[in-house]
Image (cartoon, rainbow, N blue to C red):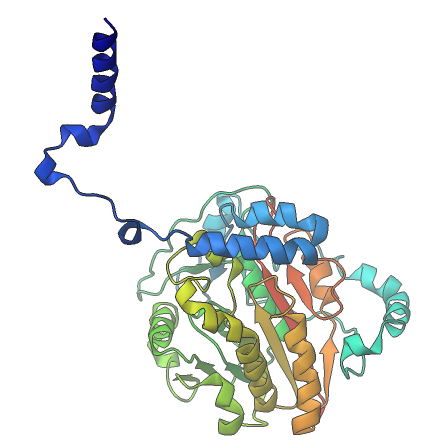
Length: 402
């Protein structure tokens, strides 16, 4: 009886193991290295962020962590070059609003009441934190009325449908993280400006700058040839061919860190949207992940590359011109520290004096759409939040004085 019971148990085990039902000649032992890495890049990124951002963000990190691991929220940047005039109306009918032009008109009034107290508080801060900055300048917020970006309300995770082409095969809108439009708005491009987008691919911010329809000339550059090809494709899908000429637009694929040797004292506005750890992508996609073990050296060099790119952008700007530095990471090393070093080195090596332009009018105006990080002494940052799952986007605006 005992022998029969043991035979039955053995038979059940063999039946449960599907491999036992496969002919021996067809059985293949799974090879771990050929299936998936033991430590995928997304897991390595999460470990790194847990160790770093839990200290940097403190009590904010758990909620930011959940948002980063959740489905991101998009905005639809409207294409003013499209002949379809009903795009915004159609999006409004679905519940969207243009967060730029539909925002409350009283948003900036509160700044006038406490601007004096803000200046007094800033004068008490440690001078080292300003890194040779003469002082932050409060100025009224001027936005281009031509840049429009539709978003669904807070807490609404409805996804946009792909944009449809018009009669000229130009798409009606470009889907992107709505927070990435903020650096373009803050850049404040004016009529007749010469503008440089130093790290332009895949092209969302360059497209947003073009929507202002005010620039005299735009140069878009990216070091990567493959990314520059993608940039060309985006521009051809949204911008008329007659505009894509050397008189209005130049597309290059130079090493951005060497731009100071190519053109100096030239541009009225410079956007330096540097390559970074792209936190959200690093947590959700194993493909092209900067935390892949084969890219460890590249990831460690990022702050130095970012610093060189920002310095090149500063040199490319003319005196009185403005430079916007932006990333899509929460890392202080890639954000504030890079700006601090660039301000110091620009003065020390190139005799260029800079001032930081206060972006709080921008954050105050769009506080109902985005969730901003508190208490940054340089720049502003959109941090992910489940109710408004945009970002992360860091931005800091510099004005060249000499």
